[in-house]
Every structure is written in structure tokens, then in C-alpha cells.
Image 1 (cartoon, protein in one colour):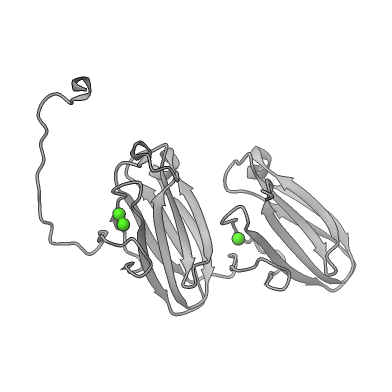
Image 2: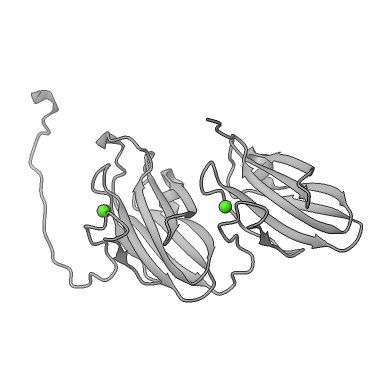
Length: 257
Ligand SMILES: [Ca+2]
Ligand SMILES: [Ca+2]
Ligand SMILES: [Ca+2]
């Protein structure tokens, strides 16, 4: 197939750079082989093939908010998928990074307890076709943010495991997978009108569904938040008595088996 033969010469240069502290080291394809990384340090890695997976490991010694900044060198339609995993392997936060959004950089914030956590980076698509491999490097920085009061703490997948939240405080959460469900709980000590303001970071066609539940589990109010409306923010108002309530958030499209 000579027609596919690239014409002309190609050139390359090998250079040994002394400062290797912030670069990826293969093989790092499993939790066991994960590369230990430091906070507040920009790392540069790349996916070498569709089967490449990169694991990085951080240790947190306090309850904190982890901010993960992820960015790509190039604007790639088939980009990167990355996940923040607990030591036990549960997904605490996840994101797809592609196109110019990824080139501009994005931040994923997750509340964590002290412990060991893993960042897993792999191709956005599950295909083994190498034409879907994102080109160029990716960059990430993990930072511990002192103010962790307004972030979601996983696992919060049931009323029993719900996260206690305060009034008049903006919380940031995310659905880490289609099966992720987030529960928040709060107590009300009088008859009142409860206003829930809900907003999304991005304009998403498959948006969020959230519900206000009574302690017994009845749905007192519900809304679907999607597209520009959700990006702009909306408010759901419900009259409530004193008692315990839950806010439940889930993805709008639910897959059933
Ligand atoms: Ca790699
Ligand atoms: Ca790897
Ligand atoms: Ca979540």
C-alpha cells in the first residue's frame, strides 16, 4: 500500500533532561505499579496506546478537599478519561477531558478523608482502535485545599450514608458514573419554605434529576436540570414541616438491565 507511505525524511532528537521530578514514569499500569506524586506539582504524562493506563498515587493525612487540575497539550476530540479512586477502588470523582475545554484545563474537586488515593488516566473511548488515541501530553496537578466544607464526600449513595449539609452554603458535587447517586441530609426545626438552588458547571443534554425526600422517603419535590437552563441555575421551592430531609441527586438517564 505504497500510497500510504509518508514521503520525505523525519527527524528526531533525544535529550536527557536532568529535572525528571514531574514527569510520568512507565510502567504505571496498575494500582500496584502506581507512581507516587506530590501535591502542588505539575506532572506531565501521556497515553502511549489505547491499552495504556496510568496510575498515580497520593497520600492525604487529613480530611481535605482535593483539587485535581487536568489539562491537555492539544485539543483532541477523543480525549482522556480520568478518575480519582479510593484505596478500596471506589470512584470518588471522574471526568472526560476533550477538545479545547481540555486544552484550557479543568478542575475536579473531591472531599476526602485521610488515606491513599489513586488518579487513573486512560483513553476516553473504550475502543482498541489506535486512531482514537489522544495525541500529545496531558498535565495534572493535585492540590489540597484547606476549605473543604462545601464539597461532596463520597460514598453518599444512600439515605443512611448521606452527607450532612448546612443552609446558605453552596455545595459542589458530581456524578462519577451513571450509577452514582448522591444523598445529602439536613434538619429543619420549623414550618418553612425550603428553596433548593441547583446549577451545573456545564451545559449537559443528559442532565441531573434531583429530589427532595422526607425522612420516610416520600418525594416532596423533584426537578430535571439540563441544558442551558441548568447552567444558568434553577430554584425548587417546597413547603416543609420540622423534620429531617434528604436531597437526592442522580443522572437523568437511568440504564435498566
Ligand atoms: Ca502513560
Ligand atoms: Ca501506563
Ligand atoms: Ca457523587
